[in-house]
Length: 134
Length: 91
Image 1 (cartoon, chains in turn red, orange):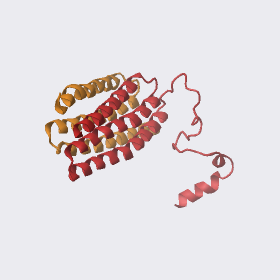
Image 2: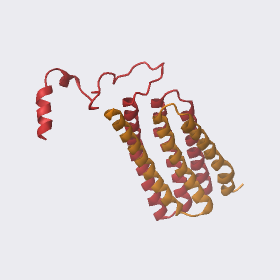
Image 3: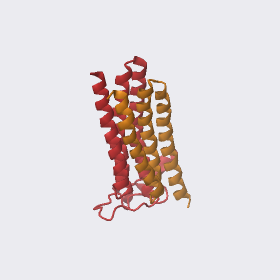
């Protein structure tokens, strides 16, 4: 019975990792590829690690597996956001069938800060003074 | 067919095919961001291969290496994106 659960979890995990790699090859755009790596690969690796925890059935191994899964779940979105932001700044083109680019013209080119609409019109001066005092 | 045979002859080849596909993207990748993503996913797939291998060889010590690889993958992505952005800012 335990072997059955191990086989099922490991198979699901391997299939998800394979689908993630196929998506990384087939997707037309850098940003779509980033979305593939964060979701499918995280789920697949989590399932494979859970099958390892089922196999060993020790508290130390289960704790280790939980730590790895928690770490991957915490860091995968952060890394994806960082590399997506960097690739937006270095000018990676979107897919030619992409409909909308909501960030267009909203980043300051020099400082790489995101500006809101309020900041554009009136309150620019006092906010700059506050930030310099801090 | 025992569990070990199933893991060894079916699941490890599936993960190896995934790694070959990722390496194709790593070599082709039009921009450097694609290469960074492919490297991140290569290391993540390596974690999966290590955990299946630790089941086959009955050695839970290998999971420590998987944890360190997860750390290195995150640090590599963060460092690459930081310096890519900084290079663009200076020029």
